[in-house]
Image 1 (cartoon, one colour):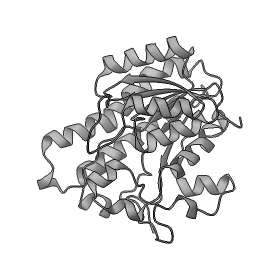
Image 2 (cartoon, one colour; image 1 turned 180 degrees about the horizontal axis):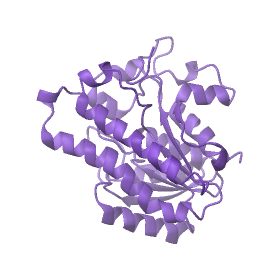
Image 3 (cartoon, one colour; image 1 turned 180 degrees about the vertical axis):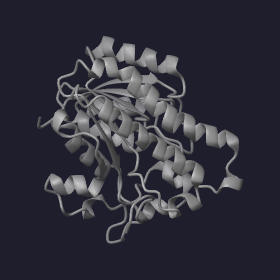
Image 4 (cartoon, one colour; image 1 turned 90 degrees about the vertical axis):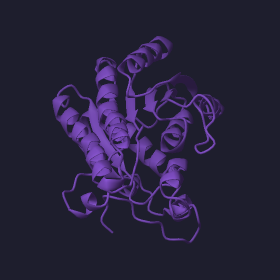
Length: 273
């Protein structure tokens, strides 16, 4: 499958950042995009809403369905899935992009923030996957793509942000489980993670100024597009890095993705230099 024309993608957190970039890349093929995100009103710290994202998606050539969805709420998820199926006739692809971040040591991590990360990252990934599965089973080339890292038990990945690491590895464990559980049914379940930091509004809130030494979200969007256009039965249970995926697709020069031309990007968490 060379493109995503007429495919329906249910993307969590697609109002901004990497989720929106993946949506826009699919929209250029003529895909249907379900924007499942919380932000309906502008936030001064995090620009972009489900409605502004929908306008961009339609301008890019796709069809958009903006829906207010808090992935901590299974009723909102179920309602959004039902509306997506009613609007587009099914769901071909789920992208678990929504995520909460707190790069904080244990004494500096309030339990409210801990719960937020576990609820959005782990529970939300599981709940959205569970809700979409009946429709993915009926799709011609079904994929679940989760934005989570390869699992490593190196102590350095836990020492300074144990709660965040546990939550992101929890997402990855869901990938492992679903990939094997639904292998025989032909549903591809894979993870994608950036080799370097990605300049998003959320990153700038968490690590102010770091985005200048990052890459644009489009590198993740192009990598996701390659994965999602592969035959689902032949590509499952992988933990991809964006660079490796793009090399598979024939792209070896990543300079166009740099936020600041000529500046070496910072290697992301969970990735060895």
